[in-house]
Length: 178
Image 1 (tube, rainbow, N blue to C red):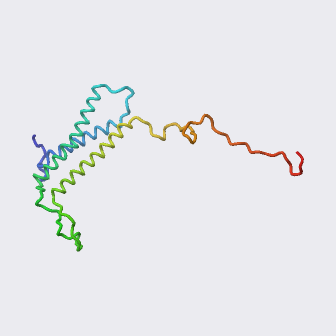
Image 2 (image 1 turned 90 degrees about the vertical axis):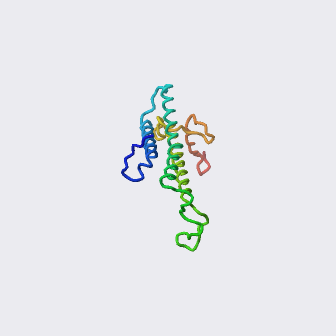
Image 3 (image 1 turned 180 degrees about the vertical axis):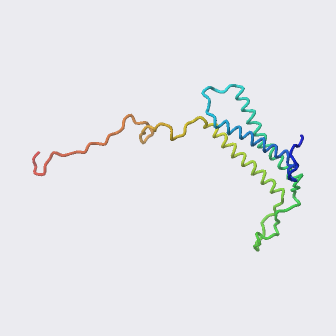
């Protein structure tokens, strides 16, 4: 695969496939958000439109869940040389200059794995948001809908509104005459 990334910064050329994959994912998500802004058509989707959408979603999921994490792992292993011999901190070191030691050792390979889990988490959250937005497109907001009919305490709609009972007046006077 040719790497067409210019050598402006020393890390750009080794991270070429990672940069291209992130750019393609951003372009695909931009197209998806553009499709969300369009109104939902009145006619049902054709078979070819559904297949094109399925291929597009599969391509975005492949980029997001397979290519980008793999390319980041490859970049961090080969170019950054993050492995188990380089430590962020060790169990014998003090925690932020306090007399307490870290309870475990963390190497750069663990940091790489934490970043990859972060990539998966962000993409999964974005995936859920996109699915929910796609399902809700074309629906009117709740404020624009009609007023909901009154319901009884059992949840059934009322046929007519209850009127307040008329006040009871007595015709009996205080002197015993009626």
